[in-house]
Length: 371
Image 1 (cartoon, rainbow, N blue to C red):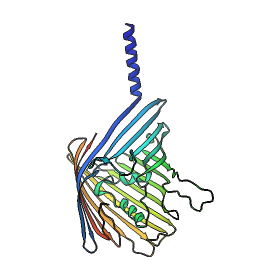
Image 2: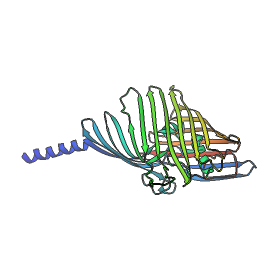
Image 3: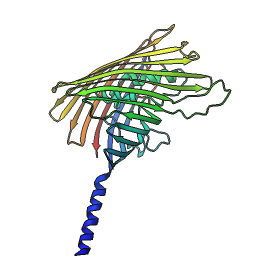
Image 4: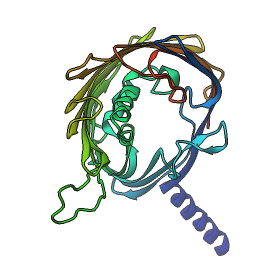
């Protein structure tokens, strides 16, 4: 009898312990076939059929867990890796394993403190208020425009556009009547030398986002700054501000975003001959549920303001359909077209290039399964 009581007590303790902590395996496998075509000003065309991934949702494999510390406190971790399931390789390139997110956190009635690699505050508006969620050929055109400006001026792409390493972040608690927000700082971790005329701050990021979501309305504003360096003598301070909103009417959901990205070069950009290049972007979009499916559409535009030169401009229209076979599995199709003017050279895919792209068209056809 005593042995039975001891066994029951041990089982009860084990049950309490398991209830206090949990670990979840999760992921998405998204595979498709895509076609891309660019047409140059002179009429030359480049095109490619490819077996792709992440046309609807980004493929990923992740582990997340929480532990109840008592008194309303909880510790948590989140390790999430991108998948290149079309080849079986790690997604995203580079040597980072958990390159989508790698954080540890402490949360409670005060909110949440999070440390590690994470989404930047300014990216959240780009993806939340885009009907295509910044995936596939339908992605908001301003994301590609920002990279085009930096690479055109001889810089590496901004590594903090979507996520940042070495991030310390604070998130407001969820019980504020619909208000939410976050503030983040990422260390550049570069060496400072006494007496040096130039100390790199490449990859330093500071940003914040504040919003309100209640019922059908969601609206948020964000601002962030980062530094990108090309050589020991030239850098660019990138300042991003955006405002996004969505409103769900039931039969349709409306989306909108305004964005400005300012690139302050020091010294003047050799390519643009200017100390500043501004990108003004806008998006309007809609989703409409149709039975088991969802229609998605958006129109986005971006215009660069360059001193002593024509202001390049690109417009993008995207249309797509998602058919849900179940809660976890969906088929999707998307078509998008970019029209470039006054020297803009933006493509639906970075895998194609021409000397001067007049227009670019892309198609995605695929299947997504979540687990």
